[in-house]
Length: 315
Length: 232
Image 1 (cartoon, helix red, strand yellow):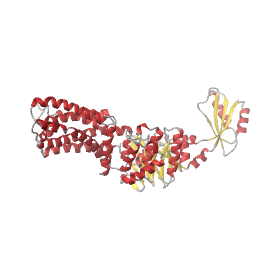
Image 2 (image 1 turned 135 degrees about the vertical axis):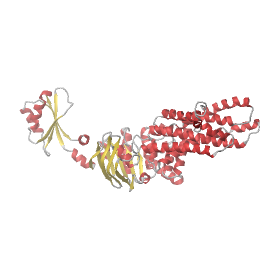
Image 3 (image 1 turned 180 degrees about the vertical axis):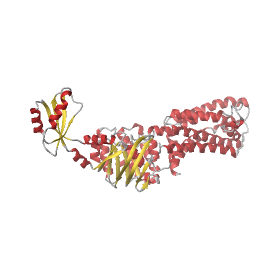
């Protein structure tokens, strides 16, 4: 459905995308995940033929973005970042305009607008000026215009940013519903969103695609346990304490965590395999005459993986 | 073509949803009434040539105000991205925007029709020069609006677009008034020089071509500016 090959984009001397290649298959909901400035929007702008890649190619629904941009755009419903809309227009007037630009007027236009309005529950605000709508409703108007021509592909740039939790969950449900029949690419920097809505996740960082996984695979990786031990001490004893923990049998890596409170040192101990290290940590602390203030068993969460992957991208 | 008209229609309607059109049209008509009628009775001549000249001068101020938001505001609000990623070609966006604002200028022209009607009550008014005068008014207005559209494509800031446009339109307008100081050839690029014969009933193809060339040039530059986003 969508295929990008070695997309490269320079803004002046700044590299926004580096050899990004990926495929999106029919009916998939793919999340583009990455920190701000990673190249998510750039990727989407290239796919919608708003900007051209410096090198590399992409096809959308079989249309090359260079040779047939109009054909590619026809297959796409696009919601740009921060949902730009004509604020002075009324909702219905705006949707009529967008439908007409897609070639749907008269009876057919009205039918399509009706369907999009029902899908996005905009029925109550059709006669209102867009300016007067809440952010959640504006977002729905943005989605309605992207759906009005019933496109096979939807490209949504940060569709849930800036919404309160209730609005965000409504939009999330809506995207899930839409995604049952269509191919969807959405970008976000929110991991939880991706887990709920997407079939596949592309993690993008520093213009590179650093991971291409299902959310389940990512969660598996995230499931790895670690032990967080808090001991009394200060910076001068930090190195010595770390050595104590490193000597524990079955401890793979020991990391000192930064940002601890005064008089406390926090270490993360990652086990080899699934070994339970709590007893060993306690014993080692006692043997070395350390005061153990706390000991926790934590799963490495998605955010850690995300941070790790995107840090690699920056390097 | 359908796309161009749809964009033009939306642009035209959106003027009436905001204050700009009402303010600019009222100011132009008020100023025109004052300037025209205060001199009309002194001249004792049934002619609307002065009206066309005044409209030309007032348009140099009014058209930058009407055109300044055309692309600048779309860029500031980000709506340009949605507009361009519709299945349209860039030139359809440019032409649609241009025709939308030209439609508004057409309304201004319609609102000046009471002038020839009123003048014809005072004495015999020749129809020919009035008709050709309106052709000239629309050509000159279209040229000024294309300058405004071009200026609007340079920036996201409407105020900047306004001043860039007014600088250019005033230059084109005033250059023949400075005839005494400037070589004659420069007169040839002034708007008044090409519009004035039409108010006398003379339609010279060279004058028409001049205005059409200005329009084509400005719209071309606008389109290049719009396409440049792909590569910058």
